[in-house]
Image (cartoon, rainbow, N blue to C red; front, side, top):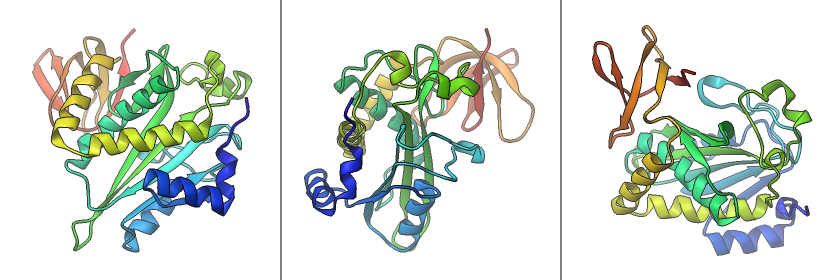
Length: 258
């Protein structure tokens, strides 16, 4: 399909879309990392920005894991929110709902969310979210990065085929520019009020690929734990029923036990 994200290289197009969406947009043909650029803008006091790239040479996800994609194959973007959004930790969780809603508006049904920050199609990761809080005297900012696998072929996903997929690999044609615009709308909606965030959390629970399943959780420190993922608390913690009782997990890597 004709993908229009490259139109953002034109300053006139970029300016028009920035005004329409209410987000000053930076577009890069190639950049080390949209997230690192977003952090630099936040550190410099930028109040609001959207950084988009066609390719990253040093993109990364949670815990510094590399996020690599061929040029033009993914939507790679980072948003700078200032002032800092309410409850930034749970906002990163709810950004997965924004991705699922944006995909649904473009005809991609049944996206699920996996705690804490993945979006899945048919049991495979299609998108991820990364959030970095930046502290400052004015209250700080949140840099929210989202990567969506859009145009990768199955061959390009060979090394990750057991865990990852793309929209194209699932037979779905999506324009990255349209997806970017819808994401801006959905993120704004969730950030706008506590009522919207409560609704998004309920939707996260309904879309969850984690709840009700036996999981193994590897926290940043300490021993792994295993149990049934029973709930997601209002603060975004995963509640796991273990043999020794319920545990509230605020951070960690989760795998489903087959």
